[in-house]
Length: 232
Image 1 (spheres, rainbow, N blue to C red):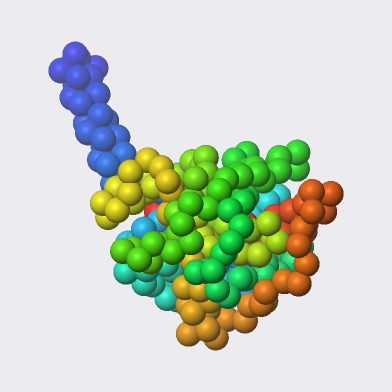
Image 2: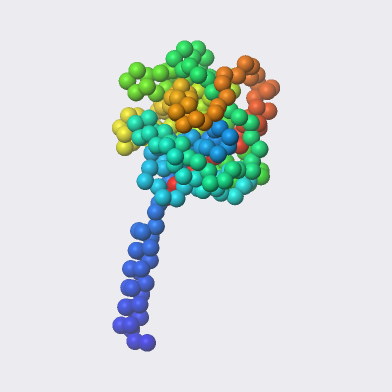
C-alpha cells in the first residue's frame, strides 16, 4: 500500500469519526423524583426538552426508559411516565400545600449518588429559605450549595414535607432569570396543581415534625424517590 492510499484512509477515517461524534446527541444529566403510584417522575422542562431518549437511573437497579406525558415550558415542569414500574422500595413523599406562609427557614434536599453502587448514599444538601414566593417570578429563593446535576430534586422543610423542586441557577442561563446564587425552587403548590390536573395522587401535609434523631431514618425511607435522569 503506497503512502497516498494510507493518507487517504486516515483522512476518511478521521472524517467518519468526526461525523459520528457530531451526530451523537449530547447527554444532559439532572434529577427528578417519583410521585403517584411510582409510574411518574417530576422534573424540570429544560432538562428533557427536545430529547428523544430519556433514561431514569434508580439506586442499584437497571435503567428504565420514560416518556413525557405533560410539558409546561412556562413553569419549567414536565411529567415523565416510566415504561415499567421500578423495583426499588420507597415511601410516598408528603407535600406542603401552601408556600406563602412558610415561617421556618431551614430546608434540605437529597442529591443522587453519582456512582450508583450499594455503598453510595444520596447526598444531604442543607440550606435556608430566603424568600417563600417572589412576586416577579413566582419562585422560591433558597441559599443552598448544589451542582447542576441536582436540579429537579425535591426540596424539603424541617418536617420532611416537599415544599418545592430545586433548580440550579446554572441551568437557567438561557432564561436569564438568575445568577449563581440564590438558587430558585418551584413551589410545591405549583407541583400539586400539576399533579391534580393530570390525576396523579399525592400525599398531603404530614402531621409530625422531624427531629435530628429521626432525620436519618426518614431519609433512608424516602431517598429512593430521588432519581437521576439522562436525556439525549
